[in-house]
Amino acid sequence: MALSRRPARPRAVEVVFLPGLYRSTADEVRALLPRVRPEPVPGREDALRFHYTGPLARLNALRTAVAAFTVLTFGVARPAQLGHPDHLRRIRAAATEVDGARSFRIEAAGSGSPAIRRLADAIGAATGLAHRPGDGDLVLRLRPSVGADGWDVLVRTSLRPLSARAWRQADYPGAVNATIAAAMVRMLPLRPEDRFLNLMSGSGTLLVERLLAGRARSAVGVDWSPRANAACRTNLAAAGVAAELVEADVASPDLLGGRRFEVVAADPPWGTRTGSHGANADLYAAMLRTAHRLAVPGGVLAVLTHEVRLMERTVRAHRGLWEPRAVHRVFQKGHHPRIHVLQRW
Image 1 (cartoon, helix red, strand yellow):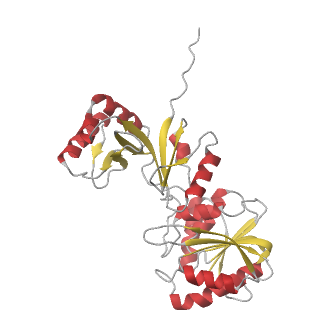
Image 2: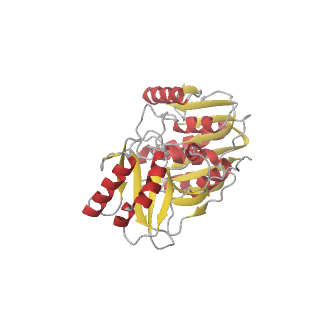
Image 3: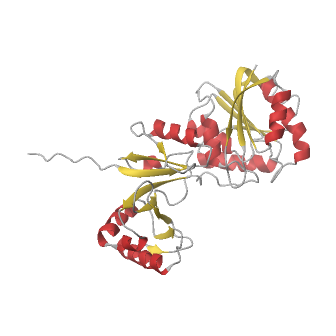
């Protein structure tokens, strides 16, 4: 008589994202993992949680997430008690699921305390991993349990953050955060018959994320900088996708001639690392006029910018060209950029 196979036990998972991207990340989780039901983590604006039985590789395919963690909850009063052999076995099982780990680090309040150092020694002995407090490649986080008495150990499911893209071989000042770019792409139509235009394409983050999200009839990037276009070519090649790159000023009246696009995206300078606040007033107006000329009637434009008031004024001044559809606020390392979604009249 054949023995029935026991179903895999669901693991608790926590996914971390940039504040403001909850809806985009929750929608992506539901699309990628149809059986799970993501919920907000109480008291947090940058995390959601769910139960999941599949492989870590599926979790690590999330593109709008900064990182994903397996969450282990222990009914202990203090972290020192996590060194019990039964608890160490659970931590070891979660750690060994992460491919390629050779070392680990612990992120916790008081991570340099004697109690945490003793716990690190016990985890190292149980897992065979070296404890490297500053740069260990497997991240373990300790915290009081959310909504229960006890302590949680969160084991990151990937050695690098999910936001660190392997395709980013060439960097460029002011490059878009890849998870914001992925969320922005999800706010746009993703039809294989669409022609996609990326104005001020820089090192290609929006182009790459759009093309990795699905097929497009064509994809074109426009930037005036030879250095930006060189970086873009490198990153497109590393990602295994292709786009036409045009070296030109977005304000050029004959840009791309009579070509038309269903979807346009732009990441204009914010006046911090690139560009200047003084020049941006003319640049943003030129961007909206050029995008209107190149978009088909009913076409969609998405603009990511930290020039909040300038963008609002520029959109109001061009209401005869573009109709605002949505504004999404994101928080990123002291910046509060907005994603404006507009539709062409």
